[in-house]
Image 1 (cartoon, rainbow, N blue to C red):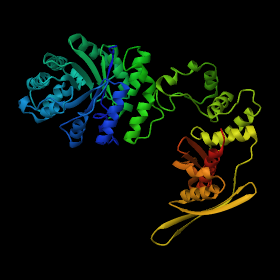
Image 2 (cartoon, rainbow, N blue to C red):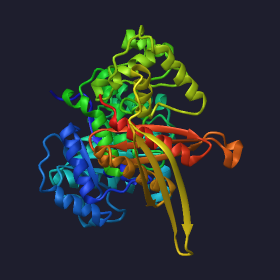
Image 3 (cartoon, rainbow, N blue to C red):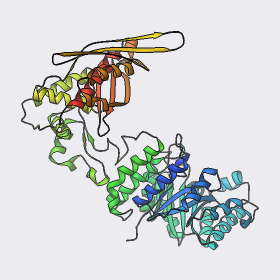
Image 4 (spheres, rainbow, N blue to C red):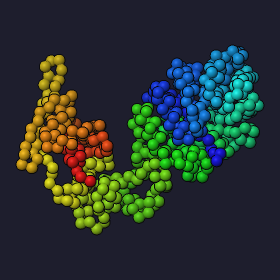
Length: 519
């Protein structure tokens, strides 16, 4: 069925202008293929005339077949005082060989006079000439009206004239752009409503998030009659970013009840969000609406108790509908329900009547008060539950360790010695490392490897340190969070001490012990 709202993704062009975002040609092709399979309607590949990378992208994209999306090349209206057929930038747009071409033009008289330094009449001609020329070459043309809302507020009649010029020349869409991201949803709605009433072609919306209302502005435009939203995955973009289509898509589908991307794609929304972050080498934001790990996380005891009885009591939607999942957090705010639900999540059979439940809860609150944090340390949490429930013996004990550093004037070398006991047997290993924690990790792994060969697969993937009491200076208590993997699963463990090496060892020991914990 024809969508009621079309999604135009500009991650590869507008998104790549964000700070810290740098896509290779291979990256752009991978993301384009992912967006196509997800079901967005347009993929803006870049500006063919701006850099060699985009020229290469379009050359390689010609050889690919997109099943759902139409590829768009992006550019601008012709230069002033230049016949459109002689404009090299316009020529490159056609040579990109994309079915869709998106061009932007000036709406604001301020920009016409101060940026283009041309007459208002010449600007209208630049818009019309370029749109008509592209249409004559068989292109589906989307006209992005830059600074549409600011221009409208400055000179309403001239802004309307620019949009009419594009429409009369054959533009398939007029997209109103809040380029500076400074408008409010009420302004967006009112101006979009007039544009829809005055124009005969389809109207779209392109917003930025400078005021924190990029998504809200896009929804306001849709309510006012727009049927096309431009944005980027995870809100990448210049300054504070663009409208985040990862939020727009489920809002349109689940809240506005309008057809958008294919229904089967909605459950892959989190996967798409994380994929693009991974390609961009950006750490996924846990607080992203809908798809972040915290989006359906519950920490307060009363909240968790209610969710345990009725999920919708504190969840606006089933997280699985967008490929996410519920996350029960454990902290000093936790109640019995938190522990029960988290235990089930970790694979333990526990209920509100389990005798050990109260000791587990008390111990967690005691440790949290001492500086421990279990929200991202599910490995340490699982060990605490397992030891309390089963009264199990430790698989190994660290009887002693020593860390030293020597410097020969050229380089520093860290060395660690670790003594472990497994049952009645003992082992000792010495290892060097790039730092004290790396040396300690290597020595512990070597000592335990003699008894537990499976630990050779374990590797540390992340190491975080947080000072808990800065007032104490170098004597402050330190929390260390370690993330580990065996290639199949990942887990976090935590350690706390005034001695950073001791805190690190606690987290390392928990990591190894969790790896040995049977399901």
